[in-house]
Amino acid sequence: MSQTLELTRDLLARRSVTPADEGCQALMAQRLGACGFAIENLRYGSVENLWARRGTGGPVFCFAGHTDVVPTGPLEDWTSDPFVPVVSNLREHPTMAGRVSVPLDPAGVASYDAVLIVTDHDSIDYVSLAKSARLIIDTRNACARTGAVGEHIVKA
Image 1 (cartoon, rainbow, N blue to C red):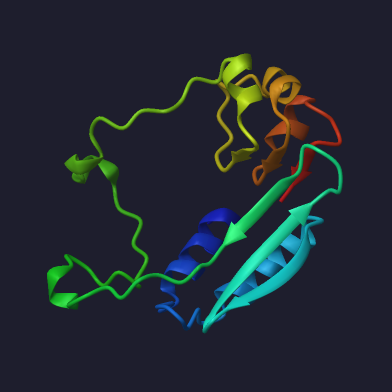
Image 2 (cartoon, rainbow, N blue to C red):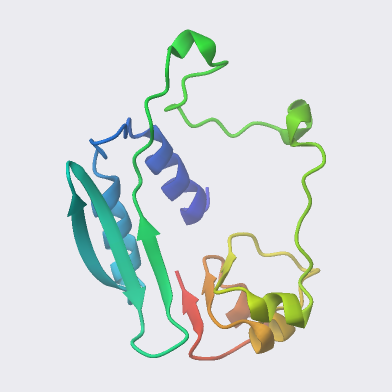
């Protein structure tokens, strides 16, 4: 299983309902800190928030937010426990129909604050992607594999 999928499953399995985040903040701080982000914890009332900043000049990538959720409501209204991560075959989930990817043209990529690579596809031109992107967080080492280089590429 990929590190990204493991992290996602770990976060989803935590019963993080406002204001208790069940360790999500600490886990994200650890992972982002290892990628060179400066971590600042911010408390608003009873809710912990995370501010993770990489770099001091522009452009700057910042992860700001909280990892807890609103109450789930009655569990019997769910088709599965929302805190038990299940990776299912998407062909069995027709509600996903109609969702589309965004184009990876240079102008579009340059308009994004960051590109997060979670899957390494042979059909993606990572060298061209790296020329247009402000910041790339590469969880699959796709850029290095294809020769895309730059200080704006972070291996996560």
